[in-house]
Length: 406
Image (tube, rainbow, N blue to C red; front, side, top):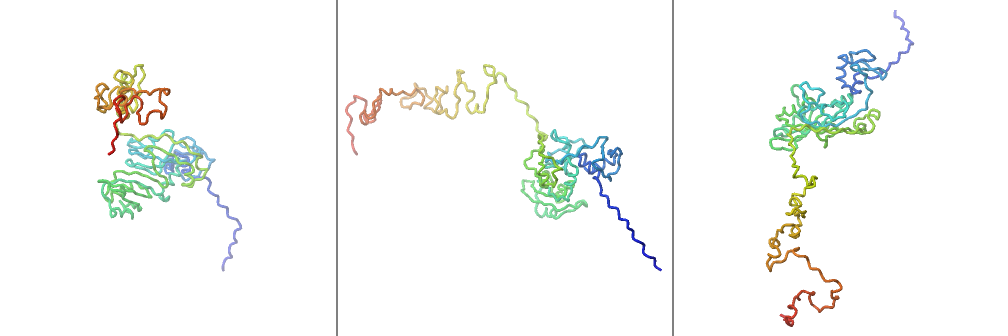
């Protein structure tokens, strides 16, 4: 005997309540406190409290109405997402604190920078583009290989790489049990014992390029990151920081207008990379030599050496400098004779056959206009007054000799 079917319940199922708020670790990361992973570690250490109660698990959602404190201090309001390009120089560690006491990237950022986090890392001996952000969620998103962003490097290796040597890297290699994705590798040029390569990767594992080069018998002696996805290093100087425009963040990262700032913040002054060159001691200045007779400092221009030194003659009077026009200048004006041997003689010492130098004597002035003969009144072919005719002797020398036709 079969039992009759149980009557169906007419009670309607309760609607699922949507999850309100966001994970506490994500909220801390969005507020710029730390990355999501570091925020989870802070929660496990008991440094985070919600509504006055210390929490020990990141599996908690919070809403804007909840009061969150970190180390007893209330959580600051959410800041707009910002992104900077930083040219990391050599010798800096990409870490907030270094257990060996070495200088870090964050110790050398320009003044006025807010608290930022690095997207990815560059080791101590690497240089080039490093992205900085104040948003922990954006940091985590851009570090994941799922973004598919290509990271480009200029690499100098010791050795002579060939296509056969680099072929395994283009197909993907396994090093110490760790699988590396295929790389984009091209040889740019061979320079002595070294060679420059262009390499593109999409993962960014710890020392990935250096380990991959060592696996094929090459040693990296310089590594420069030139691009991270759509962002390029360009001409950014070492140690300099440049903030990206909000419009670039919206176009390249897909952020909404509410998530980014309006306008563009003023870029902080660049901090020059630490130099290892010794500074030259300042040149000692002579007070007596640099002061004029009136006690004022003399002006020294770049032209003093090319113009023959200070602009004073032998008698101490101001003189015209010896410039490119000294060949045509007179000896009396220059204070010294010209360079031409014929012109270097004084007028009294010059031989009768020497051509007088220009400027030895003042040029004779002509007669006033009232004493000059009218045009066309003089005899045809006559020379100007005071000068002998080209084809007759001086006046009173006799009749003109007849011309002969040959």
